[in-house]
Image 1 (tube, rainbow, N blue to C red):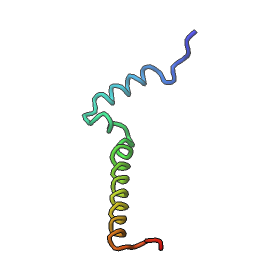
Image 2 (spheres, rainbow, N blue to C red; image 1 turned 45 degrees about the vertical axis):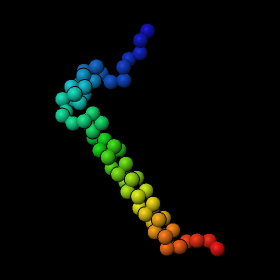
Image 3 (cartoon, helix red, strand yellow; image 1 turned 60 degrees about the vertical axis):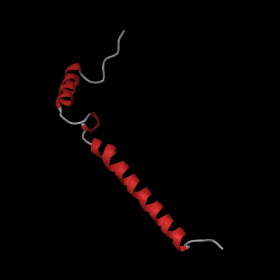
Length: 67
């Protein structure tokens, strides 16, 4: 006894044809893939560079030291 598939086979083949014909990188083919693979890493890198820069500035000027 086999279980029915989640989506019809024809619809699956349609989606496969659509994604295989797009001339972009594999990880940028989806609708929101640019957000997850480009925007989030850039935001994390920018915020970490800002925090590192602020820490270096504070250390060099002696700001925020506990007595």
